[in-house]
Image (cartoon, rainbow, N blue to C red):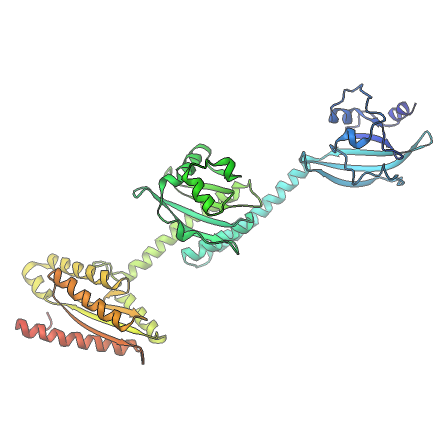
Length: 449
């Protein structure tokens, strides 16, 4: 009997999955115990005999595209292939050849499951890939870039690794009960959302915080399935077209102070290790860069008034000298009566007077304001219209009068022959002419007050 002959020729306990089929009609004639166990048959169950191989095996260890039993297998040497059963995510090393038994040409297939080995190899390769990405991230942060540029470059690397639409950092302001998107990278063709996600109420991200507290990190694989449509979180994500996301929390002193997110990842979607490793780099680098920027800001900031100081003024003046703008407006302002205030009311009062003057000056002219001496202030308006300069000058006089602060002002505006040094001299001279009127009005002889 054919079955007995095959049982005698094929070791039953070989550890592999084995079956034999007739090449004429694909009918099974033999399966060993391992194969029976794999397809759910009892060891003594031979009911499979005569059935088509693909009906019994159900693609468990058998790939019809590789099988030669139907078309006739004429190779007498084993042919090898690695087969991946996607339905069960299993891998098999499959070998087949033709054998002759009792004048019949039969198809012999031997399969060994190698899922663990293949996945171990995949894990190793994946780990190497992740390490390469981390090295790229570290090298990016070593570059002498501003915080924004460094983080954007870093986020581009992360976005490429996950084949994502967007990578971003949210930071939480517990005092204001808001969260804001502070850094963002978007893939080509994807609309940036950073400007739309400032000062978002905490309630919108509270579900995220709850999940962070529960799981430490999370993956929303399907917005409709994983997030309630009644929540503001769902509405915000849907409005941006986000269907899935990865997120890990930023923790400082045991408190969640923000989170790093990746929208619509298409690759490496269960790899949180990269995000958590990168997060360590980001937190350290952000802190370091913020300290450096704080030091730089202090070198440019007047400690009393918080206006730009003379160092920054000289730097801007030199830059405008090298590259004059199309239009330039200058305001030169001097505080009247400071010496008298210091002499009669004390220097603390004088400092308070300077601070109040600076506050109004900055409120009218914005960030491009400078304290260049004890009671001297300058505003530099690049590409401003003449009418704008006149309007702001008038507003400055009104605000100072309301605060009972006396000042002298000189201005210069050009849209031809723009020259920062000449215009500063013009504005200073005009301010001094106004100052002389103040001297005469108050009968002050000491002009170096």
